[in-house]
Image (tube, rainbow, N blue to C red; front, side, top):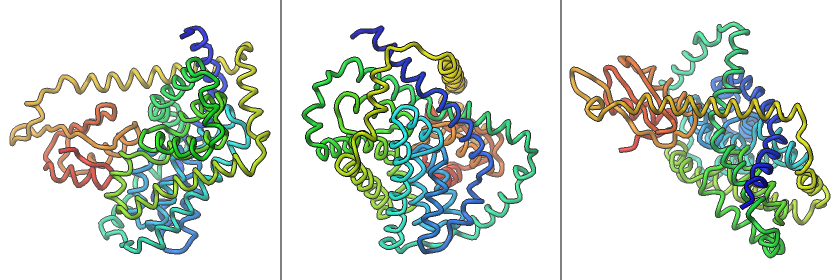
Length: 426
């Protein structure tokens, strides 16, 4: 492998994406702070198509991955949102986000950036309406949940000064969000650079003659694995540049971020198996439909200039502004990786004996299933901390562990974690 070619390709892709990613992260932070689940839930209750449409429109700009969207969706469900609206939200949110839409425009061009949210909207509406039609079991939220909503609405968070909220938004966008997607973004960038350097141009030429077969193969590969909406972009760019059609690349952009087996296992416990199957089927059907539309109905000239332009300009000099943005992004990635490593190290000194639950010292570790990012960890931490008698809570999403100290029972922890959208491994 040509090492210099690999690193140059990697840096080129980072330079192209970094200004848009940073802008998307900042906007994402403000959306996270100023758009609350309890506010959204008021618009997502009841039947009909309007809650489904609202859920899709609310979910498209939110920067949540397929694991991070689960606790938000569970919260919406517990606060009274219908199953159809929750399914719509679950489909639309991980496929897009202001950060991924901006990054899509930077690498793949305007047509991809426009079609991506349109595809998410139509797929979300298909899934939400199908759930309302074929899954009639839609019990209302419990009284306890309603109490929780009312307490949330009156929480001190609503009285935080604007300046402090802006600081929280920047911290979430440039620290927490980078920590959430950083690992998957780096993986996507490395895979894209490896494809550029190692994969011969003629490898995909045969598949290019059979777009539907290539799309089905892409679904089989992308659905089981986890790839975030932003991390999938450089991979799609490299695959299209190597000969696959734009429609095949679009299938990766839509199917990969929206569905993975781990999330669907947890989701089935929250909205039921039938709704989960409808959710996954809607993602796959919409991805294939848009992929075929791009390849057979829309002009190829709409999609290829951006791809060929990036390939042709990959040996040009890097711009100063783009390079500075790349340096900032790489520093943020390094910082969040260091924080994650330190958090994991702080837990490592705890022995099995300290985790034993006894009358004198109540300290126990729980292995949490489905916790993939800092957002997930924050949801678990907040939920467990609200239990009466808890003295300290420590969550490490990289290790998938929850360490709790205080007066509690294991059953209570399991119930609260499950209500938050996750599960405690036995």
